[in-house]
Length: 240
Ligand code: SAH
Image 1 (cartoon, rainbow, N blue to C red):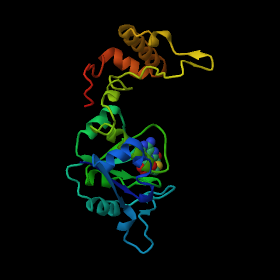
Image 2: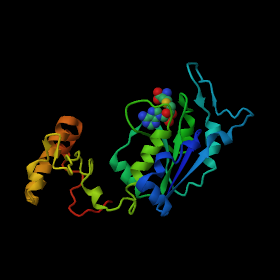
Image 3: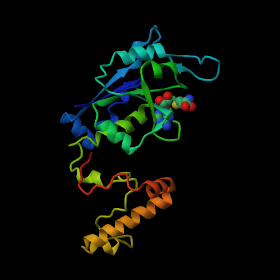
Image 4: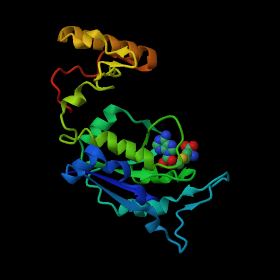
């Protein structure tokens, strides 16, 4: 079973949204599981503090490596990578989520305050992952985003694997526009081609839309798509 362990100062935030909808059902069906470690339990003082002032001066507080080391050592890793959520990390991608989803799970370390004593990263072989170029107040929401991106890729968690095959980022492009009933909404109709029943035309229209949306909204992805070609053009809908 795919397992996520989250090290945090706020274990009460979990499972939170990770218990909703298909992820909650997946956990109930033992397709994956989540547990938390309260970093504060490894404090060495009666105040329960886990941080101290930055060496060299400056604002804020830094989480202590010795306390984090003990919290990490309390976890049975079982070959799982330890990932620290951090704005300095490698940007999270769908490819990364996919590769993590295929492994045994992950151990997520959530920072707070100014951040974390640098020495822990090498001492425990920790990888840093960012969920975007902005700064959150803590790693918890980032850990939830990472875990959710992975868990929905675990076979059986989403109802039908086919919904995975044509999504944004699957082959390096964003998704085409989707429509459903009613046929007309506030004077706006569903594009005729989608109601034509002509599958070839529909596929062509969708391809054209994805190209256009990617080119205008994400020139970075578009450029890579043009130079490298599709990341993966698979007609069968194998989610992995
Ligand atoms: N001083 C740090 C930011 C600390 S924010 C810096 O400038 O890099 C506090 C914590 O929030 C971080 O330790 C990290 O765990 C989390 N966090 C903030 N932004 C994040 C992001 N974009 N992705 C992942 N985690 C983030």
